[in-house]
Length: 336
Image 1 (cartoon, rainbow, N blue to C red):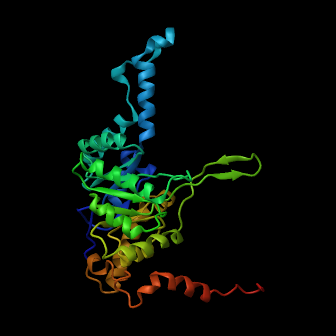
Image 2: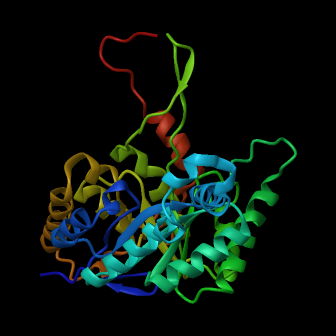
Image 3: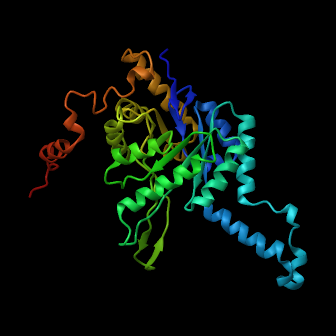
């Protein structure tokens, strides 16, 4: 049987399949089922800084200053009974740590430096083995340049690394104009890895009500191609863990990411659609493929199809764009 072990953020894993941040991790039983199915680590659902701040405002209004509420103040819980979302998240980390034998990666979605420092420190104290930082910053202001956005990410990372000792992974959007340069800076700032790419849910328009609507838009296998390309380009140019995120539904999807150079592959939509059983199927498929093609280990496979190792490196660059356009043929019956 091939050796499926790999490393993720400096942590030794039994295989490269890691469920990413989804609602499945909000409760203990689904996480236990994922571990039973073969998950090598778990990335928890994100704790949002805005939720923590809102809880603090509610606590201040209703529990610390109840006199403003008159007679209704008597129906409020005592201060010691109030359980915030931060309390629940930290307790959940501790509960998972007590029950699981695989690493726990806490996920923090924040915007301010002070918020990241405080929350990151508490997650480490609760027992998290690593932190994934999901720092989505939408630069919708024409006065904000790309260098400002990049500096925002790096400042958050540097400040956080001053107060935590566990590994930190940046989950990045696909919008950087010079991704290898930024990843190099993130490595210098103390990151242990990068996850490519964060998938944002986009608002839609209801044409009847003329209102914005929000719905979950799950990925397909085709959504992983962008991450696969950049992982292939980055492999060998950084010492950071490279995690592939988005579009991994089958063993074939995972294998392509590993061949390109990913150290681990994150699964989300596939698990939401099919449950923990899908992880077991993907893991079995990866093992069969390695055995059939006479690979002894994931390490032997990893990065063998990266840009640095393929006979024609330009296939990952502009040349691929030209070749793709030239190869297109219209479907039968379509005339131009």
